[in-house]
Image 1 (cartoon, rainbow over the protein chains, first blue to last red):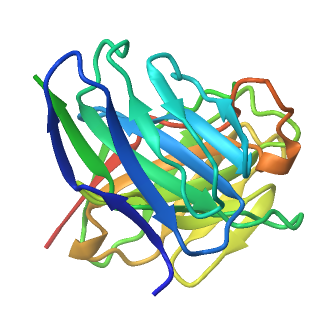
Image 2 (cartoon, each protein chain N blue to C red):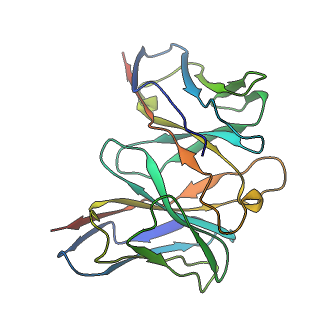
Length: 115
Length: 117
């Protein structure tokens, strides 16, 4: 089956620790994204990547870092500098834009709790 | 960034048509309008996308007036399984985003649709 996998589904960390969230896709998409969602809120873009070895900051990149060494993988590190890391994290990838329409495919999400 | 405004919540009975409107007054020329559906603790799922006029697929229709400052998602005959949060997204396909600028992908606050018998 083609799709996006995120692991783990639930993650618990102590304050002050860095943590890396995994995102893998086998859809052969060039573009990948990381979003953060807080309870009752919409999604906010953290980072996005258009192609391997390239990524750009989104709206709330502070305290986060990413890498894109392979097309299939776009891991997100939540650093100790992120003041409120507890949230639901969603990874997505998107179809190539051919001038018609484009669609983002989302993974199942990772719920991170930092205490 | 194009900011979007949607109703916080809507209620409907099963079998009715539901129309959810999104306001995006400062939409940019290159922005597309996309709607997603999200169930609790899951990632959003694409419903429909359009640039102008009307778009229809097997699950919904999207109406966009000429000025593009708003859009309406129409769900023809809702069922209990349509109970979810619906997001209006205004943004630019990645190939049109200039390198180094802030993202132009903006999710609205979402509309929580509750369908009952």
